[in-house]
Image 1 (tube, helix red, strand yellow):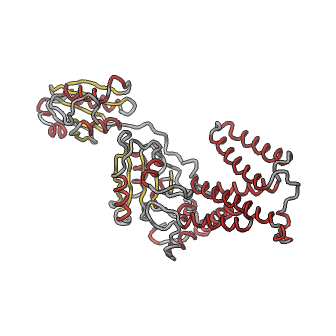
Image 2: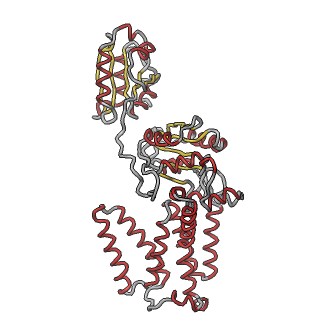
Length: 477
Protein backbone atom coordinates (compact mmCIF):
# COMPACT_ATOMS: atom_id res chain seq x y z
CA UNK A 1 0.00 0.00 0.00
CA UNK A 2 1.57 3.30 -1.11
CA UNK A 3 1.50 6.19 1.33
CA UNK A 4 -0.06 9.48 0.23
CA UNK A 5 2.45 11.80 -1.44
CA UNK A 6 4.85 9.05 -2.53
CA UNK A 7 5.56 8.23 -6.18
CA UNK A 8 3.63 5.30 -7.58
CA UNK A 9 6.57 2.89 -7.67
CA UNK A 10 5.79 -0.71 -6.90
CA UNK A 11 8.98 -2.43 -8.09
CA UNK A 12 12.45 -2.24 -6.59
CA UNK A 13 15.38 -0.36 -8.05
CA UNK A 14 18.84 -1.85 -8.54
CA UNK A 15 20.18 0.91 -6.30
CA UNK A 16 20.15 -0.24 -2.68
CA UNK A 17 20.13 3.33 -1.34
CA UNK A 18 16.96 4.10 -3.30
CA UNK A 19 15.27 0.94 -2.05
CA UNK A 20 16.24 1.67 1.55
CA UNK A 21 14.97 5.25 1.35
CA UNK A 22 11.66 4.21 -0.26
CA UNK A 23 11.11 1.52 2.36
CA UNK A 24 11.74 3.96 5.18
CA UNK A 25 9.30 6.44 3.66
CA UNK A 26 6.59 3.82 3.21
CA UNK A 27 7.08 2.38 6.66
CA UNK A 28 7.20 5.83 8.33
CA UNK A 29 10.41 4.59 9.86
CA UNK A 30 11.12 7.60 12.05
CA UNK A 31 7.72 7.26 13.76
CA UNK A 32 8.26 3.63 14.86
CA UNK A 33 10.81 2.96 17.60
CA UNK A 34 10.74 -0.81 17.12
CA UNK A 35 11.80 -0.75 13.44
CA UNK A 36 15.56 -1.13 13.11
CA UNK A 37 17.98 -1.05 10.19
CA UNK A 38 21.65 -1.76 9.71
CA UNK A 39 23.89 -0.95 6.75
CA UNK A 40 26.76 -3.33 5.90
CA UNK A 41 28.91 -4.34 2.95
CA UNK A 42 28.45 -7.77 1.35
CA UNK A 43 31.12 -8.78 -1.18
CA UNK A 44 32.05 -5.14 -1.66
CA UNK A 45 28.43 -4.09 -2.32
CA UNK A 46 26.33 -1.74 -0.21
CA UNK A 47 23.56 -3.60 1.65
CA UNK A 48 20.96 -2.83 4.28
CA UNK A 49 18.99 -4.86 6.82
CA UNK A 50 15.48 -4.07 8.07
CA UNK A 51 14.06 -5.91 11.06
CA UNK A 52 11.54 -5.42 13.89
CA UNK A 53 12.84 -5.53 17.43
CA UNK A 54 10.97 -8.22 19.38
CA UNK A 55 10.46 -10.48 16.36
CA UNK A 56 14.05 -11.02 15.29
CA UNK A 57 16.51 -13.56 16.63
CA UNK A 58 19.38 -11.19 17.29
CA UNK A 59 22.00 -13.90 17.62
CA UNK A 60 20.97 -15.28 14.23
CA UNK A 61 21.26 -11.84 12.58
CA UNK A 62 24.71 -11.38 14.12
CA UNK A 63 25.85 -14.73 12.73
CA UNK A 64 24.46 -13.84 9.30
CA UNK A 65 26.32 -10.54 9.30
CA UNK A 66 29.57 -12.23 10.28
CA UNK A 67 29.14 -14.65 7.41
CA UNK A 68 28.24 -11.86 4.94
CA UNK A 69 31.41 -9.93 5.86
CA UNK A 70 33.46 -12.93 4.70
CA UNK A 71 31.88 -13.14 1.23
CA UNK A 72 33.84 -12.28 -1.89
CA UNK A 73 32.58 -10.25 -4.89
CA UNK A 74 32.15 -13.40 -7.01
CA UNK A 75 29.73 -14.77 -4.38
CA UNK A 76 27.31 -11.89 -5.02
CA UNK A 77 27.58 -11.38 -8.77
CA UNK A 78 23.77 -11.93 -9.05
CA UNK A 79 20.92 -12.73 -6.69
CA UNK A 80 20.65 -16.43 -7.60
CA UNK A 81 24.36 -16.96 -7.00
CA UNK A 82 24.10 -15.13 -3.68
CA UNK A 83 21.17 -17.27 -2.52
CA UNK A 84 23.04 -20.43 -3.52
CA UNK A 85 26.52 -19.61 -2.22
CA UNK A 86 26.15 -16.67 0.12
CA UNK A 87 23.02 -17.40 2.15
CA UNK A 88 23.61 -19.84 5.03
CA UNK A 89 19.97 -19.86 6.11
CA UNK A 90 17.09 -22.16 5.21
CA UNK A 91 13.96 -20.01 5.11
CA UNK A 92 14.72 -17.45 2.40
CA UNK A 93 12.48 -15.92 -0.29
CA UNK A 94 12.60 -13.08 -2.80
CA UNK A 95 10.27 -10.06 -2.88
CA UNK A 96 9.52 -8.40 -6.23
CA UNK A 97 7.43 -5.44 -5.02
CA UNK A 98 7.26 -3.06 -2.09
CA UNK A 99 3.78 -4.28 -1.13
CA UNK A 100 5.00 -7.88 -0.85
CA UNK A 101 8.09 -6.87 1.10
CA UNK A 102 6.17 -4.60 3.49
CA UNK A 103 3.56 -7.26 4.24
CA UNK A 104 6.20 -9.85 5.06
CA UNK A 105 8.34 -7.35 6.97
CA UNK A 106 5.43 -6.26 9.19
CA UNK A 107 4.81 -9.92 10.03
CA UNK A 108 8.35 -10.12 11.45
CA UNK A 109 10.50 -11.28 8.52
CA UNK A 110 13.94 -9.67 8.14
CA UNK A 111 14.40 -7.76 4.86
CA UNK A 112 17.73 -7.40 3.05
CA UNK A 113 18.63 -5.12 0.12
CA UNK A 114 21.89 -5.49 -1.82
CA UNK A 115 23.15 -2.96 -4.33
CA UNK A 116 22.69 -4.19 -7.90
CA UNK A 117 19.75 -6.50 -7.09
CA UNK A 118 16.28 -5.40 -8.17
CA UNK A 119 14.65 -7.74 -5.65
CA UNK A 120 14.51 -7.78 -1.87
CA UNK A 121 15.62 -10.83 0.11
CA UNK A 122 13.31 -12.08 2.89
CA UNK A 123 15.00 -14.00 5.71
CA UNK A 124 12.55 -15.69 8.07
CA UNK A 125 14.53 -15.73 11.31
CA UNK A 126 11.67 -14.39 13.45
CA UNK A 127 10.39 -15.64 16.78
CA UNK A 128 6.98 -14.52 18.01
CA UNK A 129 6.41 -13.79 21.70
CA UNK A 130 4.30 -16.71 22.92
CA UNK A 131 3.18 -18.53 26.03
CA UNK A 132 3.70 -22.23 26.64
CA UNK A 133 1.49 -24.80 24.92
CA UNK A 134 -0.18 -25.71 28.21
CA UNK A 135 -3.60 -27.32 28.50
CA UNK A 136 -6.49 -24.88 27.91
CA UNK A 137 -8.30 -24.18 31.17
CA UNK A 138 -11.78 -24.55 29.61
CA UNK A 139 -11.09 -27.81 27.71
CA UNK A 140 -9.41 -29.82 30.45
CA UNK A 141 -9.53 -33.59 30.35
CA UNK A 142 -9.15 -36.33 32.94
CA UNK A 143 -6.87 -38.32 30.66
CA UNK A 144 -5.12 -37.44 27.42
CA UNK A 145 -2.66 -34.91 26.06
CA UNK A 146 -2.02 -31.76 28.08
CA UNK A 147 -0.98 -29.40 25.30
CA UNK A 148 -3.11 -26.67 23.75
CA UNK A 149 -3.11 -24.17 20.92
CA UNK A 150 -1.46 -20.78 21.46
CA UNK A 151 -1.64 -17.42 19.66
CA UNK A 152 1.19 -18.29 17.22
CA UNK A 153 0.04 -20.02 14.03
CA UNK A 154 3.39 -21.68 13.30
CA UNK A 155 3.33 -23.42 16.68
CA UNK A 156 -0.29 -24.47 16.18
CA UNK A 157 0.54 -25.89 12.75
CA UNK A 158 3.37 -27.91 14.31
CA UNK A 159 0.99 -29.35 16.92
CA UNK A 160 -1.29 -30.58 14.14
CA UNK A 161 1.56 -31.81 11.93
CA UNK A 162 2.92 -33.80 14.86
CA UNK A 163 -0.36 -35.72 15.04
CA UNK A 164 -1.11 -36.11 11.32
CA UNK A 165 1.85 -37.50 9.37
CA UNK A 166 0.04 -37.90 6.09
CA UNK A 167 1.09 -36.56 2.70
CA UNK A 168 -2.57 -35.74 1.99
CA UNK A 169 -2.69 -33.37 4.96
CA UNK A 170 -2.67 -29.76 3.73
CA UNK A 171 -2.57 -26.35 5.41
CA UNK A 172 -3.32 -23.56 2.94
CA UNK A 173 -2.61 -19.99 4.06
CA UNK A 174 -4.53 -16.84 3.15
CA UNK A 175 -4.04 -13.16 3.97
CA UNK A 176 -7.18 -11.40 5.25
CA UNK A 177 -7.64 -7.72 6.05
CA UNK A 178 -6.39 -4.73 4.08
CA UNK A 179 -4.76 -3.32 7.23
CA UNK A 180 -4.19 -6.25 9.59
CA UNK A 181 -3.23 -8.71 6.82
CA UNK A 182 -3.93 -11.54 9.24
CA UNK A 183 -2.81 -15.05 8.39
CA UNK A 184 -5.64 -17.58 8.04
CA UNK A 185 -4.91 -21.28 7.51
CA UNK A 186 -7.36 -23.85 6.15
CA UNK A 187 -6.41 -27.38 7.26
CA UNK A 188 -7.79 -30.59 5.75
CA UNK A 189 -6.93 -34.03 4.37
CA UNK A 190 -7.29 -33.98 0.61
CA UNK A 191 -8.80 -37.44 0.10
CA UNK A 192 -11.26 -37.14 3.01
CA UNK A 193 -12.55 -33.57 2.81
CA UNK A 194 -15.76 -32.49 1.07
CA UNK A 195 -14.28 -30.81 -2.03
CA UNK A 196 -17.37 -28.70 -2.65
CA UNK A 197 -17.31 -27.33 0.90
CA UNK A 198 -13.55 -26.72 0.66
CA UNK A 199 -13.95 -24.75 -2.58
CA UNK A 200 -16.73 -22.68 -0.97
CA UNK A 201 -14.56 -21.89 2.07
CA UNK A 202 -11.65 -20.85 -0.17
CA UNK A 203 -13.90 -18.56 -2.20
CA UNK A 204 -15.44 -16.97 0.90
CA UNK A 205 -12.01 -16.20 2.35
CA UNK A 206 -10.66 -14.88 -0.96
CA UNK A 207 -13.70 -12.61 -1.41
CA UNK A 208 -13.53 -11.06 2.08
CA UNK A 209 -13.22 -7.28 1.98
CA UNK A 210 -12.43 -6.18 5.52
CA UNK A 211 -9.82 -3.91 7.05
CA UNK A 212 -8.90 -6.23 9.89
CA UNK A 213 -9.87 -9.27 11.91
CA UNK A 214 -10.05 -7.36 15.18
CA UNK A 215 -11.20 -10.30 17.30
CA UNK A 216 -9.36 -12.94 15.27
CA UNK A 217 -11.37 -16.16 14.94
CA UNK A 218 -14.73 -14.62 15.92
CA UNK A 219 -14.29 -11.77 13.42
CA UNK A 220 -13.55 -14.30 10.69
CA UNK A 221 -16.59 -16.37 11.66
CA UNK A 222 -18.91 -13.37 11.37
CA UNK A 223 -17.37 -12.42 8.01
CA UNK A 224 -17.67 -15.93 6.58
CA UNK A 225 -21.25 -16.44 7.73
CA UNK A 226 -23.30 -13.58 6.30
CA UNK A 227 -26.74 -14.79 7.41
CA UNK A 228 -28.58 -13.44 10.44
CA UNK A 229 -27.25 -14.48 13.84
CA UNK A 230 -30.60 -14.33 15.66
CA UNK A 231 -30.54 -18.08 16.28
CA UNK A 232 -28.43 -18.50 19.46
CA UNK A 233 -27.15 -22.01 18.70
CA UNK A 234 -23.51 -21.96 17.54
CA UNK A 235 -22.72 -22.10 13.83
CA UNK A 236 -19.19 -23.38 14.41
CA UNK A 237 -17.43 -25.60 16.88
CA UNK A 238 -14.43 -23.95 18.53
CA UNK A 239 -11.62 -25.81 20.22
CA UNK A 240 -8.27 -24.98 21.78
CA UNK A 241 -7.18 -28.61 21.84
CA UNK A 242 -4.89 -29.92 19.06
CA UNK A 243 -6.04 -33.52 19.63
CA UNK A 244 -9.67 -32.49 19.05
CA UNK A 245 -8.73 -30.55 15.91
CA UNK A 246 -6.63 -33.43 14.58
CA UNK A 247 -9.47 -35.92 15.19
CA UNK A 248 -11.87 -33.62 13.32
CA UNK A 249 -9.48 -33.37 10.35
CA UNK A 250 -9.05 -37.14 10.25
CA UNK A 251 -12.83 -37.42 10.23
CA UNK A 252 -13.02 -35.38 7.01
CA UNK A 253 -13.74 -31.98 8.54
CA UNK A 254 -12.06 -28.63 7.86
CA UNK A 255 -10.18 -26.76 10.58
CA UNK A 256 -9.57 -23.01 10.20
CA UNK A 257 -6.81 -21.33 12.18
CA UNK A 258 -6.35 -17.58 12.57
CA UNK A 259 -3.07 -16.04 13.69
CA UNK A 260 -3.23 -14.48 17.19
CA UNK A 261 -6.05 -16.82 18.25
CA UNK A 262 -5.64 -19.98 20.38
CA UNK A 263 -9.03 -21.28 19.21
CA UNK A 264 -9.71 -22.96 15.87
CA UNK A 265 -12.98 -23.38 13.97
CA UNK A 266 -14.18 -26.85 12.98
CA UNK A 267 -16.45 -27.11 9.92
CA UNK A 268 -19.02 -28.60 9.38
CA UNK A 269 -20.71 -28.69 12.79
CA UNK A 270 -23.84 -30.40 14.08
CA UNK A 271 -25.54 -30.39 17.47
CA UNK A 272 -23.99 -33.78 18.22
CA UNK A 273 -20.47 -32.47 17.53
CA UNK A 274 -20.94 -29.70 20.08
CA UNK A 275 -21.73 -32.04 22.97
CA UNK A 276 -18.77 -34.31 22.27
CA UNK A 277 -15.70 -34.05 24.49
CA UNK A 278 -12.22 -35.62 24.33
CA UNK A 279 -12.85 -37.60 27.53
CA UNK A 280 -15.47 -39.59 25.62
CA UNK A 281 -12.56 -41.17 23.73
CA UNK A 282 -9.93 -41.17 26.48
CA UNK A 283 -11.70 -43.95 28.39
CA UNK A 284 -13.07 -47.40 27.60
CA UNK A 285 -16.25 -47.51 25.46
CA UNK A 286 -18.53 -48.24 28.44
CA UNK A 287 -17.21 -45.29 30.45
CA UNK A 288 -17.17 -43.04 27.39
CA UNK A 289 -20.78 -43.92 26.60
CA UNK A 290 -21.82 -43.19 30.18
CA UNK A 291 -20.10 -39.79 30.11
CA UNK A 292 -21.73 -38.89 26.80
CA UNK A 293 -25.23 -40.02 27.79
CA UNK A 294 -24.87 -38.16 31.10
CA UNK A 295 -24.02 -35.02 29.15
CA UNK A 296 -27.09 -35.48 26.94
CA UNK A 297 -29.28 -35.83 30.05
CA UNK A 298 -27.73 -32.73 31.64
CA UNK A 299 -28.37 -30.80 28.43
CA UNK A 300 -32.06 -31.68 28.43
CA UNK A 301 -32.40 -31.06 32.18
CA UNK A 302 -30.69 -27.69 31.84
CA UNK A 303 -33.21 -26.53 29.25
CA UNK A 304 -36.39 -27.94 30.83
CA UNK A 305 -36.01 -28.23 34.61
CA UNK A 306 -37.08 -24.74 35.73
CA UNK A 307 -39.79 -24.30 33.05
CA UNK A 308 -41.35 -27.66 33.99
CA UNK A 309 -41.20 -26.81 37.70
CA UNK A 310 -42.80 -23.40 37.08
CA UNK A 311 -45.55 -25.05 35.03
CA UNK A 312 -46.28 -27.55 37.81
CA UNK A 313 -46.46 -25.02 40.63
CA UNK A 314 -48.79 -22.91 38.48
CA UNK A 315 -50.99 -26.01 38.14
CA UNK A 316 -50.67 -27.76 41.53
CA UNK A 317 -53.55 -30.12 40.75
CA UNK A 318 -51.26 -31.86 38.24
CA UNK A 319 -48.67 -32.75 40.89
CA UNK A 320 -49.03 -36.39 42.06
CA UNK A 321 -48.63 -37.18 45.74
CA UNK A 322 -45.20 -38.72 45.27
CA UNK A 323 -43.99 -35.39 43.85
CA UNK A 324 -45.53 -33.21 46.53
CA UNK A 325 -42.05 -32.23 47.78
CA UNK A 326 -41.53 -29.96 44.75
CA UNK A 327 -44.22 -27.54 45.94
CA UNK A 328 -43.25 -24.31 47.69
CA UNK A 329 -43.01 -24.79 51.46
CA UNK A 330 -42.63 -21.12 52.45
CA UNK A 331 -44.65 -18.04 51.67
CA UNK A 332 -43.93 -16.40 48.32
CA UNK A 333 -43.03 -12.72 48.63
CA UNK A 334 -41.56 -12.34 45.14
CA UNK A 335 -43.32 -14.08 42.23
CA UNK A 336 -41.50 -17.28 41.28
CA UNK A 337 -40.93 -16.18 37.68
CA UNK A 338 -39.08 -13.08 38.91
CA UNK A 339 -37.07 -15.18 41.35
CA UNK A 340 -35.91 -17.43 38.52
CA UNK A 341 -35.11 -14.54 36.18
CA UNK A 342 -33.15 -12.71 38.89
CA UNK A 343 -31.19 -15.89 39.62
CA UNK A 344 -30.47 -16.36 35.91
CA UNK A 345 -28.96 -12.88 35.87
CA UNK A 346 -27.19 -13.40 39.19
CA UNK A 347 -25.43 -16.53 37.90
CA UNK A 348 -24.03 -14.57 34.96
CA UNK A 349 -23.00 -11.78 37.31
CA UNK A 350 -21.09 -14.21 39.52
CA UNK A 351 -19.49 -15.76 36.44
CA UNK A 352 -18.28 -12.37 35.18
CA UNK A 353 -17.05 -11.48 38.65
CA UNK A 354 -15.08 -14.72 38.87
CA UNK A 355 -13.46 -14.08 35.47
CA UNK A 356 -12.37 -10.57 36.49
CA UNK A 357 -11.29 -11.51 40.01
CA UNK A 358 -7.59 -12.19 40.72
CA UNK A 359 -6.92 -15.89 41.24
CA UNK A 360 -5.99 -15.46 44.90
CA UNK A 361 -9.38 -13.90 45.62
CA UNK A 362 -11.59 -16.19 43.51
CA UNK A 363 -12.13 -18.73 46.31
CA UNK A 364 -13.09 -16.11 48.96
CA UNK A 365 -15.42 -14.53 46.39
CA UNK A 366 -17.13 -17.88 45.77
CA UNK A 367 -17.59 -18.42 49.52
CA UNK A 368 -18.99 -14.95 50.12
CA UNK A 369 -21.30 -15.22 47.09
CA UNK A 370 -22.54 -18.62 48.25
CA UNK A 371 -23.32 -17.34 51.75
CA UNK A 372 -25.01 -14.14 50.60
CA UNK A 373 -27.03 -15.62 47.75
CA UNK A 374 -27.80 -18.86 49.53
CA UNK A 375 -28.46 -18.09 53.18
CA UNK A 376 -29.30 -14.41 53.38
CA UNK A 377 -31.36 -14.34 50.19
CA UNK A 378 -33.69 -16.99 51.62
CA UNK A 379 -33.88 -15.55 55.12
CA UNK A 380 -34.64 -12.09 53.75
CA UNK A 381 -37.65 -13.47 51.90
CA UNK A 382 -36.48 -12.60 48.42
CA UNK A 383 -36.10 -16.21 47.29
CA UNK A 384 -37.56 -19.57 48.16
CA UNK A 385 -35.21 -22.47 48.82
CA UNK A 386 -36.73 -24.46 45.96
CA UNK A 387 -35.88 -21.72 43.45
CA UNK A 388 -32.25 -21.71 44.60
CA UNK A 389 -32.06 -25.50 44.48
CA UNK A 390 -33.36 -25.87 40.92
CA UNK A 391 -31.27 -22.98 39.62
CA UNK A 392 -28.20 -24.59 41.22
CA UNK A 393 -28.93 -27.83 39.34
CA UNK A 394 -29.41 -25.88 36.11
CA UNK A 395 -26.11 -24.04 36.63
CA UNK A 396 -24.23 -27.31 37.19
CA UNK A 397 -25.78 -28.68 34.00
CA UNK A 398 -24.70 -25.58 32.07
CA UNK A 399 -21.09 -26.00 33.18
CA UNK A 400 -21.13 -29.60 31.93
CA UNK A 401 -21.00 -28.15 28.40
CA UNK A 402 -17.56 -27.51 26.94
CA UNK A 403 -18.99 -24.95 24.51
CA UNK A 404 -19.73 -21.47 25.91
CA UNK A 405 -21.98 -20.75 22.94
CA UNK A 406 -24.00 -23.93 23.52
CA UNK A 407 -24.46 -23.09 27.21
CA UNK A 408 -25.81 -19.62 26.45
CA UNK A 409 -28.04 -20.93 23.65
CA UNK A 410 -29.69 -23.27 26.17
CA UNK A 411 -29.97 -20.39 28.63
CA UNK A 412 -31.79 -18.17 26.11
CA UNK A 413 -34.25 -20.93 25.19
CA UNK A 414 -34.85 -21.65 28.89
CA UNK A 415 -35.53 -17.97 29.69
CA UNK A 416 -37.91 -17.65 26.72
CA UNK A 417 -39.78 -20.78 27.83
CA UNK A 418 -39.96 -19.49 31.41
CA UNK A 419 -41.45 -16.16 30.34
CA UNK A 420 -43.98 -17.78 27.99
CA UNK A 421 -44.97 -20.32 30.66
CA UNK A 422 -45.49 -17.57 33.25
CA UNK A 423 -47.76 -15.62 30.90
CA UNK A 424 -49.61 -18.29 28.89
CA UNK A 425 -49.30 -21.35 31.16
CA UNK A 426 -49.45 -24.65 29.19
CA UNK A 427 -49.69 -22.96 25.79
CA UNK A 428 -46.64 -20.85 26.60
CA UNK A 429 -44.66 -23.88 27.77
CA UNK A 430 -45.43 -25.79 24.58
CA UNK A 431 -44.59 -22.72 22.48
CA UNK A 432 -41.24 -22.36 24.22
CA UNK A 433 -40.39 -26.01 23.57
CA UNK A 434 -41.38 -25.64 19.91
CA UNK A 435 -39.21 -22.52 19.58
CA UNK A 436 -36.25 -24.40 21.02
CA UNK A 437 -36.73 -27.36 18.69
CA UNK A 438 -37.11 -25.06 15.68
CA UNK A 439 -33.93 -23.18 16.61
CA UNK A 440 -32.04 -26.48 16.59
CA UNK A 441 -33.65 -28.05 13.52
CA UNK A 442 -33.56 -24.95 11.31
CA UNK A 443 -30.23 -23.54 12.43
CA UNK A 444 -28.19 -22.55 9.37
CA UNK A 445 -24.48 -23.23 9.31
CA UNK A 446 -21.79 -22.27 6.82
CA UNK A 447 -21.66 -25.79 5.38
CA UNK A 448 -25.35 -25.74 4.46
CA UNK A 449 -25.76 -29.21 5.95
CA UNK A 450 -28.38 -30.26 8.48
CA UNK A 451 -27.69 -29.15 12.05
CA UNK A 452 -29.21 -32.38 13.39
CA UNK A 453 -27.24 -34.75 11.14
CA UNK A 454 -27.21 -37.79 11.42
CA UNK A 455 -30.87 -37.65 12.50
CA UNK A 456 -31.68 -35.81 9.27
CA UNK A 457 -30.66 -36.98 6.78
CA UNK A 458 -30.75 -40.25 8.69
CA UNK A 459 -27.51 -42.20 8.96
CA UNK A 460 -27.79 -45.14 11.33
CA UNK A 461 -24.06 -45.86 11.66
CA UNK A 462 -23.17 -42.24 12.23
CA UNK A 463 -26.02 -41.80 14.73
CA UNK A 464 -24.74 -44.79 16.65
CA UNK A 465 -21.29 -43.18 16.79
CA UNK A 466 -22.77 -39.85 17.88
CA UNK A 467 -24.84 -41.26 20.75
CA UNK A 468 -22.67 -44.16 21.90
CA UNK A 469 -18.92 -44.44 22.31
CA UNK A 470 -18.25 -47.38 20.02
CA UNK A 471 -14.99 -49.07 19.15
CA UNK A 472 -14.18 -48.63 15.49
CA UNK A 473 -11.56 -50.37 13.33
CA UNK A 474 -8.52 -48.65 11.80
CA UNK A 475 -8.26 -46.27 14.74
CA UNK A 476 -11.09 -44.02 13.56
CA UNK A 477 -12.97 -41.94 16.05
